[in-house]
Image (cartoon, rainbow, N blue to C red; front, side):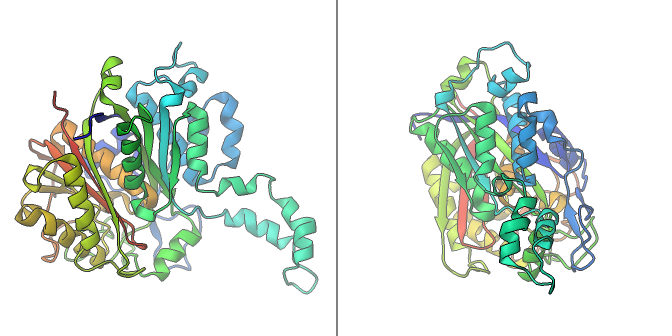
Length: 443
């Protein structure tokens, strides 16, 4: 085990079930579903017309007054990260620059800015097509074709000078670190759905090697746009059902694809003694991280889940625990047949028969695929499971696919002693895999 121990002290979630960890947790326990008919744009030209959507999020309410103008140059992904960062910091009871600027504490700051790091996973942010189309239209000549000269002379002037800054993946970390004055190592990781786990793992390493005492980490993404929907549709990853209540069925015999969504989560990781010194609430101890990559195919997963198995082995070795110590699985479960089966086989390769005996959490039936934000949401919910000895039921899971054979909790919340959790994540394309191990804090 690492000499510098790392604990989770804050959770900030923004999901289709609500703003804040409590809203998402209660929504899952109550069996609510965050999937609905797409509203921000007309999806009639697509086969899939449903998504996980965040409502009633006003980003200006989560930043200092002096920073509200900056919201104008934030893409949806950035806004989700900024809101989640505020929620995580508040939940952790930290006093940061943001908290002082909002006059929510008298000070001083509770973490040395030079020891406060950030690692945030991001997707490839889609440009605002309405905004871009307006500018492109002004560059059309008399013959109705695009004119590069008009674009340089007139078209570009119809975009804000800072337009590009809305769509750079590193801007999630940029805004979060500026708002909270986090000056220690900062990284952006863009590895699709694996991004959050990889970012959390890097933050874990940053603290264990002594380069920071506190890190804000996780990920956020919104696929709720025409380009995000089109890409997933062309790749054949989406459910053929347009019933919001039943479309996404992780590990179920009727699973036939996933549902696009938006959302994210940021967690506060903290060195144990630092957390104890300020009397922080501790959800769990993060004890192991493992990552891997494979080159089986850019589009389809390794049928045997060998990359997932390798990441799990590394995480267990790092945590100095064996497979028998794991008593809950936080599955990734996208609802895509090949990926569900690959994940199950990879887990079973390492855990053996226990993979089908210990309770498993699967939440994407209720919130969809949140892209780079998925893993952080999974891990935050798993930390709440550990804290409360309760596992929320999976939505839309009635009969488990025999090729998956997980003991997915269904119907109603399950109460059971939980001491160690294994959480896995993988990118749908690109072969990136990651695993994290959490435990109840031991003295």
